Amino acid sequence: MIRRSIDSLGEWIWGAGVQERPLFIRAPLLALRLVLAVGRDLKEGYLGLRATSLVYTTLLSFAPVLAISFSVLKGIGAHNRIEPFLQDFLEPLGEQGQDIAARIVTFVDNIQVGVLGAVGMALLIYSVIALMHKIETAFNDIWHVSETRSFAQRVRDYLGVLFIGPLLLFLSVAMTTTMQHAATTRIWLQDGLRLPPEIIDMLFGGLFQIVPYALFGVAFTALYMFMPNTRVRFVPAVTAGFITGVLWKVLGQMFGVFVAGSASYAAIYSAFAALILFMIWIYVGWLVVLVGAAMCYYIQYPSNQPLSRRDMRVSPHLREKVALQICAVIGETFYAEQKGIGLARLAARLRVPSAVIEDILSSLVESGILALTVGRRPEYLPGRPFDETSVQQMMEALRARDAFSARSLRHIRAMQSVDDVLKRGEALRAAALGKITLKQLAQGNIPA
Image 1 (cartoon, rainbow, N blue to C red):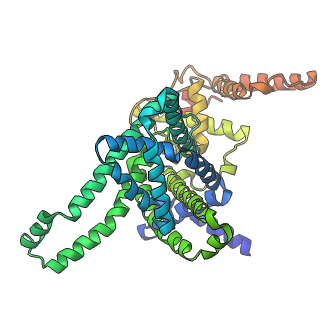
Image 2 (cartoon, rainbow, N blue to C red):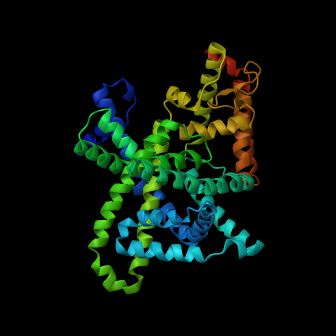
């Protein structure tokens, strides 16, 4: 009875047709599905494992990253902005955070980038690129992207972020400080809107309580759009970015309460207590960032929310069935509308998670059965004339691509009778499917 109720609840949450439900049911249900999907990823341990890896890399690359940022800010006379930024980042650690920030700034200030030499500068840049590459790999894993940026792209993109990022940080802090002390704005509010001074002070106080959340939201939005080696749409990125910004500040306050009440850590670890708490906070920070990346992915691809990583493997029979359905839908759309179809629309038509069909689509594109357009919204089209391509040819191309990925197993020993049975089955299948073209399949005109 209980099991049946749980299954019914799961079907109600994850079942198809959520878009047809009333808005007052659809909106909370979509939010619940997002929370459950991210919670499942946390439970399975993938996000925690990536966060642990990033903690180690961050500790190794923290000083080089700050050294480069410090050099950029020092060139414009704004290097004193690093310590307030670090203090804000380490604020949950309390007084220990301020001490750590001061020590880090002193250490970075003692690094003379100009006298490191070619080898030292190369190692400095390499450690920074290694950190950024590890972050990209973690994001690509969340987005199920197998290809990373090339080395040339890494050097170009990562160093661009490291040189432009400190300037944007300086500008944002300067703009916030200027607005906070802008007498002109206060005069305009007081004279133009005729607001009393106490109302103006209340408005300014409320505004600048929101500003840190907004700045974190903008920073996370840029991170989620730039870091994965795939196209991330703006709406999912900005939604996940601002949710992550709020989550970061809230967890920071909670962690500050934890640190304030963790006198036992100082008693147990003595001088190492600050380092232990620093590492824990870095882990919590990276976990929050990766949770936001998972939210961004699931918002952009809601069809993947019910699917666990353990459920992404499909049987060969189901893989061929999905491939046939993909070709049928793409052919139908092409012959009826004279255009291609995107991944999200294709997943909605098939009612199959996009993470499942994306791998099959990649195999069909690489084998030449399908083609992918280049542009802001890539679409899939027939890669060869469907009226001249049989279902058997499509199956052979798909199998050949799969066999190439498992080429180390091609020389498996088999009895002659096993080979004879397989050849007979292939001959019967080729005779039956070789007469049906993909165009006939798409149009439903299967010959008797």
